[in-house]
Image 1 (tube, helix red, strand yellow):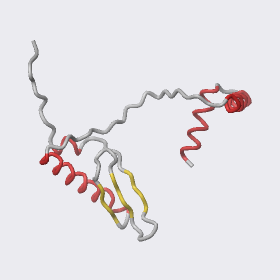
Image 2 (tube, one colour; image 1 turned 90 degrees about the horizontal axis):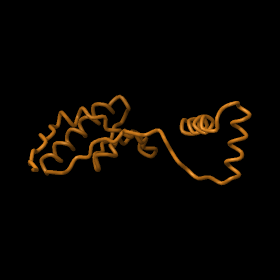
Image 3 (cartoon, rainbow, N blue to C red; image 1 turned 120 degrees about the horizontal axis):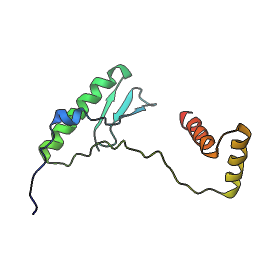
Length: 123
């Protein structure tokens, strides 16, 4: 027997506590920065300095959430769960080069690839 128990709706404060990822993009032409939340489409604000970023982004997020709730828009929650696993295919020649480098360093291929990816991402 199914029961139609509705989950209580989240409040603006509930959504404000969620860890939405914010992206900061420098405006090379006019100066300042554009801030946006990828999980909240259209939630964008601009600031002249990074000192304003926290306050302005929180204001923009609150206004966006208030409008979304008022309009009955389905609000996507941040997705931050990752398994830490990645399967990929690569050319045999790249596999060979990576395997040799890992062997030279005295680590597993997996450790070496993670190390190299980490270096590439932080550049």
